[in-house]
Image 1 (cartoon, rainbow, N blue to C red):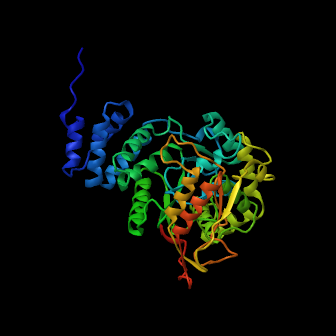
Image 2: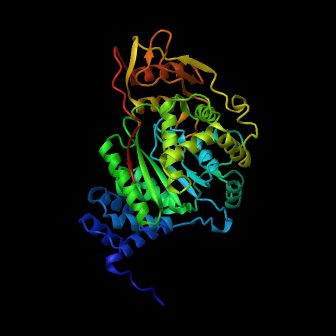
Length: 447
């Protein structure tokens, strides 16, 4: 018997037409579109056309919730109830920045504070680094474990930072790849659904978002970053996921390193309680405290911060990190001998300041691109990454630089590559006679 013809209003062209003309898509139309993304019944041209229509026409909050829910359920949705952790299941997401290694530190801190952290992270593309690339720098670390191993590591270590599998929100994977080549990535409704569909599929009980703005962020403009944060929080709550967002400044590199292995080394230093960049410490503690207070493990932000600092100073967070690495195939003694497993590229050059003075401004995207040119990032998803290259001892805005105080150190495979990176960093940093007024790294919070 021949199948029934599709309802005219649910034909791909009619769904595209409705959004093109500024209409709101009903739930059934969005469900049809996401099914078409997943099973291929929407062609690439039709997906791209709808993405462009949304880019120009936007989406209501109800449409965003419907799209996020449909994309979440396009694949496997993890359910941790059977594991009986007896602890809140939480996670954090960052919109990305240069030197952002917060996830590596935050996950074990939250585990030490009494949470379970099933963190599904991504790889870097362009000038921002990816959490998964940093972890892949650790020899033996398995970033795509089986679901059974994933659950077991969560039980034993309290946290597991892994990559997205093909079963998690597959509609998003296809949708994003087409948005990436059709100049529609910057649509806030589509960014919202892309981020949250993967987080909802991870079976979370609470989420905190680090939404960045500034020269090294995806959203350079503060007002656009605030709009994205508000969209993410509203849609997460509309989909049943308690959520908050902190807006953080990305007008300078976060921490003193940018690369892959070198950022893991800095993360281990912080977990060991060694002195680290104050901005990195503040962002990490603020995000952790938001979660700890949000799930009721502390009465307020102040007591939550005390718990977080205790997890660091006592070594409990370091133990969780070490346990996670070992359980996922990495060296059991990584935190004891990090340099043994995370060697840096053999050519090391200082970046001299072109004139003595203080660091007044930083083109953070330019700093990130210098790491990419060294081989530490990727222009296309298929590009290989050199984990050993990068920048270290990066000076902060307001720091003095001069003949004996370089802007940073470059770690490269060849002298020629190192010299190119030196020039790129010099072009990205503005030196002045006087320091600018300090700006807080934490700008705002969306509850």
